[in-house]
Image (cartoon, rainbow, N blue to C red; front, side, top):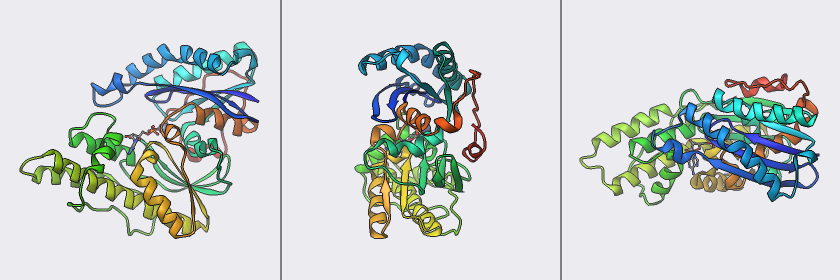
Length: 338
Ligand code: KG4
Ligand code: ZN
């Protein structure tokens, strides 16, 4: 089965072709980073307009590069939520209209399900069941994944998500949007000089809270007589140590609590080098196995949506061609609905 995947939930237009037998045939991505950088964050109206501009040319480019054509498609999967409503509507209307014109089913996909299945794009795939640590701009969750569509949220963020904390801290240090990658680069130059709190690290539960950490960074920044480049990198180092320590500790706690042996790390913060190193090591030391998507599939992309489409075709394929957008869709709701 040949599936076209379309991602347009936020600031990346992603398209991909996935063959259920051969795997990923190709993918294309257009990032809006330059468009939003000037404003220090995503401007929803600009995001929607940019998706409109790029989505059709990207699909054409993808089909050409894979030596394929619309007539060969068996289905079209698209992100129907959660995300920015205008941005979601672009992907949804293109996918439904194309599917209707080709007389093939469409498959609405939950963006986070795309992220948590992304490691399955790799040759070395995890078997079900596993724990997923999903850390993106809007989410920090630990999920018990029993099989496709069977997800139990074990821990969630009580306030800021991990990516949001990276972005806000980066802004405090004067780094440009999106702050996560810039802050982690800066942290590489830093020394172990400051000690920041590790929120909820010793709590029994699996929830996260990162907003207090951001306040602690603000207090630390204000205390400095002069915010030199070297102090900035030391603060970035301390911040990254704190977030990654909490994420690693809670991940191991989730594995022990559920008696599972495998963990998948996904979402934009999953691209963080320090997090990857620490989790890999801790898992090795404790007899667990960790799985990361390749860096290009940690952040938003069309490949994870095409793959999720292939994996849930039998559960979610539809032919009513109604545009389906759910900007506030919770992952726990997809067990029983499409
Ligand atoms: O999954 P994603 O691309 O979009 C959402 O669904 O939110 O995640 C974006 C988030 C941003 O907050 C970004 O700063 C963060 O992931 N991020 C990183 C890194 N790369 C992206 N955070 C820390 N270190 C990174 N290397
Ligand atoms: Zn995402």
